Length: 116
Image 1: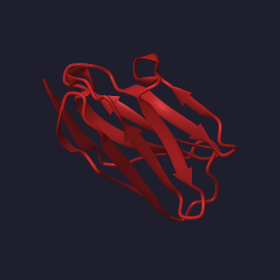
Image 2: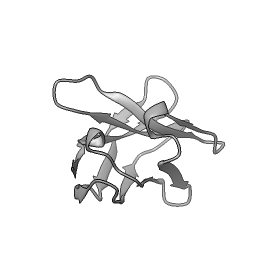
Image 3: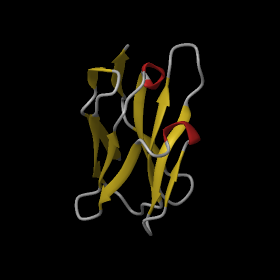
């Protein structure tokens, strides 16, 4: 079984920064993509950023230029540096790990609240 544990969420004023961390542990046979998703109240969960095993990254248009995803391959950790935060970034942020199908794992989520 694979466990993902997020940390780093909290309350921040608009324009501020937060860094989310996600630690993956357990029996991990393969990692193809690690990423961050978010879900705001009343909205669907959406992709924020993802990074492949090869280091390629993908970002939602709404966070491009403000958020940076990175990964420590030696520890199976993934990070999300969030700068210039806006109130609309308020959501629960979830870490995701995709291995070879059908291995798809989620963390429990961490709350990010941005006050105006």
